[in-house]
Image 1 (cartoon, rainbow, N blue to C red):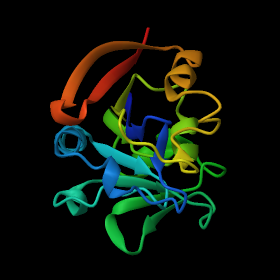
Image 2: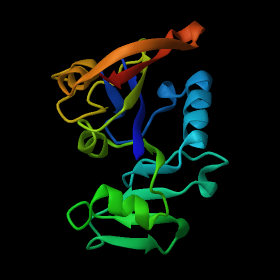
Image 3: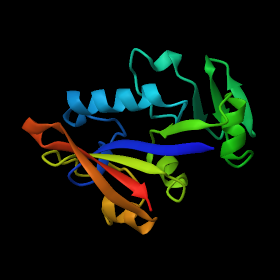
Amino acid sequence: MLRIEGYVIVSADGMLADASHVMPQALKFRGDLEFFTAGLDHADVVVHGRNSFEDQPNSPLRKRVRLTRRVAALERDPENEKATLWNPAGASFEDACAHAGVRDGVAAIIGGPSVFEMFLDRYDTFWLSEAPHVRLPGGEGCFPGVPDSSPQAVLAAHGLQPSEVRILDAENDVRVTAWRRV
C-alpha cells in the first residue's frame, strides 16, 4: 500500500504561487525548505505537474511521476530516466507508480493545484505550511476554489483534520500543520 502525503507552503491568502504561476522568493523559508527536503528524501516517489519541481540537489535521484496530457497513458520520460509520464485519463495512479517501480511506501504529492485536488480524498497526511505574513493577491491558490474557500476548509471538507503543528521559522511565524485522515 502507498501512503499518500501532500506538501505545500501557502501565503496568508492560500496562494502557492504568484499570478505568473511562479513560487515567489517571499514564500521561500529555510525551515520550510528543510522540512520539505526531509519529506521528499523519505518518499519513495514524488508526484507533480509540469510547473512543480523541487529544484534541490537530490532531485535527480528521486523517482517521480509527472502528470501530463501529452501521453496516452504511461511512458518513460525521455529527459529523465527516473521519471514516468502519466496521463490520469489513460491509467490509474497505482499503474503509474508501478511503472515507476514503486508499489508501496510513500508517495509525496507536491502540486500544482489540480494535482493536489486529484488526491483530496486519498491523502493520509497533507502537510500544510503557512506563511501568515505573506500575501499574494491575484496569485494561484493551492487548491481549486481557493481563495473563496481557505485551504483548511478544503482539507476539512475532504475528511482531513489538523493534528500536530510544528514551527519552521519562528521569526516569520512559518508553521506546518499535519492534516490527517481520521
